[in-house]
Each structure stands twice: as C-alpha cells, then as structure tokens.
Amino acid sequence: MPYFLHQAASILRCAGRTSMAPAAPSGVAPASAGPVDPALIEDLVAANRILADQGVLDGYGHVSARHPKNPARYLLSRSLAPELVTPADIMEYDLDSIPVDQRGRTMYLERFIHGEIYKARPDVNAVVHSHSPAVVPFGVSSVALRPIYHMSAFLHRGVPVFEIRDAAGMTDLLVRDPHLGRALAQSLGDRPVALMRGHGNVTVGSGIPFAVYYAIYTEVNARLQLQAISLGGSINYVAPEEGKLYEPNIAGTINRPWELWKKKALGK
Ligand SMILES: [Zn+2]
Image (cartoon, rainbow, N blue to C red; front, side, top):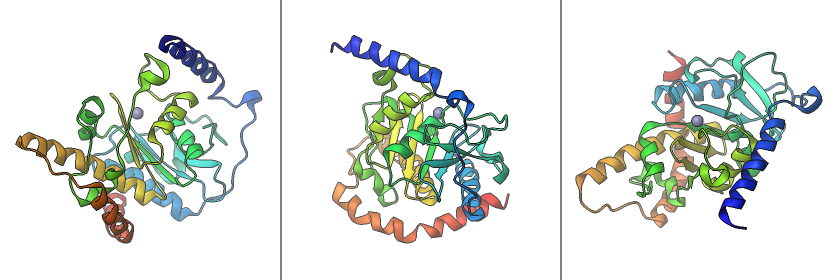
C-alpha cells in the first residue's frame, strides 16, 4: 500500500477507536481485581514523589503499577501533579484503560500508554511516562542516546524513538487513544526505555523500583552524554557486552537507592 494510503487508513482506524475508547460501551465498568496491599500503594505514591523530587516528572507525567492480583488491571493516579499524589488518588483500570470506578474523577489523557504496554509486555509490572528534560533532545536529534557509564548500562539494549507521525500523521503528539498506545508499545519492543519524538519517554520495569531507576538514570545519562559531546572529542561508550555484564549489579543493589529515594520523597 502506498505510504499516504497506509497513513490515511491508520488515521481512520485511530479515529474509530478514539470515539469508542474512553467510556465503557453501554456504561458497564470492568470489575475490580480487589483490594491491593497498602505497601504497593505506598510504593506507587512514593514513585510519583521520587520522580518529581529527582526532576524526572514536573506537573506532568505519570507512573503506574500492574495490579498484583490480576494482570489485566493496573493502578494509576487520577489526573494530578505527581508530587501531590496520595493513596486516595490511585484508580484501577482495565488494560483498555477503562476505569473500574471513575466516581467523577478526571483521568490522565495519556493513560493508554500504560494499558497498551501492559498488554504487550507480560514481564512489565510498572510504567513511567515522563517529559524528563535532558532526554528530549535525543528524541529529535540523529544522535542516539547511548550508555555513558555503568549506572545506565541498561541502555545497551538500544533506545528506540517512537515517531508518532508514522502511527497517525499529524497529531497533537499526545498518546490519547489505544491505537497510539499500541504503536508506542510496538516501538518499545522488549526494551526498558523508548523515547517519544518531540514529547518525552517511557521506561518500564518488572517492578516499581526498576521503572523508577530506569527513568532517573535515563535522565542522568542524557545529561552526561550531552556533557561528553560538548567536550568535542570522540566518545567511548559502554559496550553492549559491558552493559550486559553490569546489569545484574542493578538488580542486586536497587534496594539501596530505592530506600533512600523513598525516605526522602515521603519525608517531605
Ligand atoms: Zn506526555
């Protein structure tokens, strides 16, 4: 199919899904997967505050966790600046991003990022979407984001850039329906990070601390890479083999920064 026809078909598909997506057909809300361990809710609230504290999230962006009792449900705050999120703000959604019990609460427009990634990635239990500032240039430049040091070794798997124009032509850049969420999830593939051209990025992990760690160190790596580039010489990046060898160290020590970040963020 010629490219423009493919694009037009994609826009039509997208439009159709948009009109159907946000409200449950015939007003039937999905069933709840039941109460969640307060410790997980506390971690999710902490993740919101930590990412705000670390400059990854500002008034925008969000973080979610898969429901521990049902992989077809996830937990995400109502539409609120992350730094203000409390346990009472956490809502439950199905993977089509339809709320279990909306109760008039405003929802994040881009919640489809979360639902569609959980559908595509059974190994993922937490998703962060941010506009973390130092990362944004790498989504619009031909210079790829690559691992500068061991802390961001997870970038060795490659960092795809999601081009929303390929999925839906000209848009307002927001992932505001399931079609766009699915296209982003496809772009992410089996990796922990994907950049979103002209917008931000997503990071995913097997648990909340991992998704948060990846979001923080993607931002830090972007700053360091910009500094290395500004020195003007050639850059000796962490090799894929070195990245692979370092990665188990992240899993082995992640509780150390996580406990620190959590204490600082919740203590405020
Ligand atoms: Zn966004």
